Amino acid sequence: MPKLWVGYVFALATFVGEIIAVSRHPEIVKNVEFGVPPLEIFLPAFVARVYWFVCIYRYHKILAAIPIYVHPISPAKAVGYHFIPFYNLFWIFRWPEAIAEFVNARLRAPAMRSWVLGVGVLAAFLCQTFLDAAFGVALLFLSTTYVSGFLTRALAVPAGAPQT
Image 1: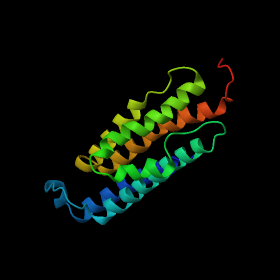
Image 2: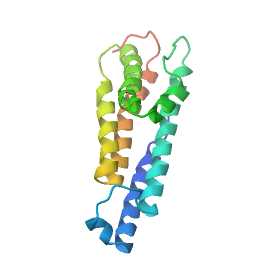
Image 3: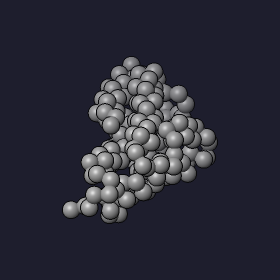
């Protein structure tokens, strides 16, 4: 499993970058412009987004390696479709659905809801763009923690074993 604490460290680094950027240029608080933010904010937020894609790749790589299970989404597709404009809005709801189907089948209960991750990721991207970059990064990895928790539980159950 990917180490999600790294994502939270990036959220903290983005927050520190926001503090540094505001201390150097206090006028950026007053002038809310939608463009490229200062490097102190942009760099940790960008690296966090790249690491998030690495996490998504790893989840699908793990699912693809399960014997007797054919995961419908390849790791490359899981990441690559995020870069197609407008389709990515659909995609953030589609790939969690495939993971939720696996988790719910393995746990033999409708435990994981795919829409939770989709809404969380969409809210994180909107928050990162329009409100606060650090909070958006934290929300992105908080949403990903939801998937990680259920996937860990599902992988701990042997295939075909009755759920107690």
